[in-house]
Length: 440
Image (tube, rainbow, N blue to C red):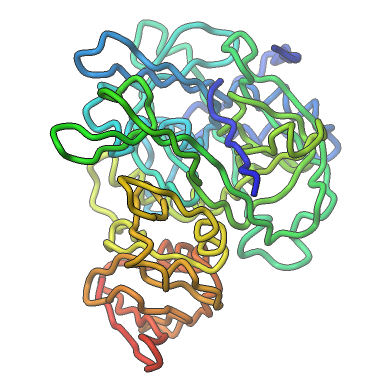
């Protein structure tokens, strides 16, 4: 089975510049959509949005090794200074959506000893501004970073945010994307190509598509302890190279907009100027035969958490955000199980599976990686939820119920939950039906 590779490192195309015609926005909470009119073309909208789209630069210095890994990607402003949250609080910083894999060095446990710095560059400028990682979800390949634009020219920056709209996950059937015109703004390959514009369409109406990204893992022994890393230069002594799945992407939408390394995290916009997703991955040329087959991830998770992220980051009391990771759970759905279960690896002379950053012994976890049902199976349990429990539906004390068909269903459900709510995980353990109740 061929692996699909994520577009993550940051030639050229065309950068659009526009005379603002003397337009002076209300800086507090300025929304770039305010300048978009009904009959504008995608290129006209892009000329307005380029000022709200950024290049993301991640510099990670290895400890005691004298080298720095530098990667670049793209991002888009989803809240600027003065943006009013649903909690009637006005943001003091600007917030940008990007892909998790663009900034993964800042939070991946494999790089916990690295000194990592995130910075951003604006359109038509080489000045860099420090940014902080404030929220992420690896499964969804989504992250939010924030910047205060500190520096001598801070007062010259008017950053407008772009409105998000769900066209993929939880919207009405008539609102879903279907062979629709879209456009992408991003930074392919090199920083000199910031805000390159590509036009295209959503080229497949199947909104339940699943793709995967691959990576290389290097395994080695150090002081009798088995170690593994994705950074070859961090390896000590002899090592083994394994090709593994890095992430399984669900609910991705296929598009024919041309993107490449560095476009990752760039905004994908519909013909009305709404931010609907992020450019994230594409098929290898060997797989696609040079055809432009690329994918976007929905912006929906950012819509769900943004206002709470702002409050948390700026030290205000706000609602918690619940994820599989924050609850200590790791789950596997049938699509993931089939893909990962077909890739048996020999690690330290032991047949193993690699899933979500960890190796699992085949002898201990064959049942989980042979999973083929609707729902999700618990791979690592917490809060009284045991390994092997199959979750098929969830409900909570406000009457909300949801059937769980795959991992994303559970992730989306948790993002809507609030502190104090009691949620029921319904399913089975072995052949016995069970319900596990968690109070948040």
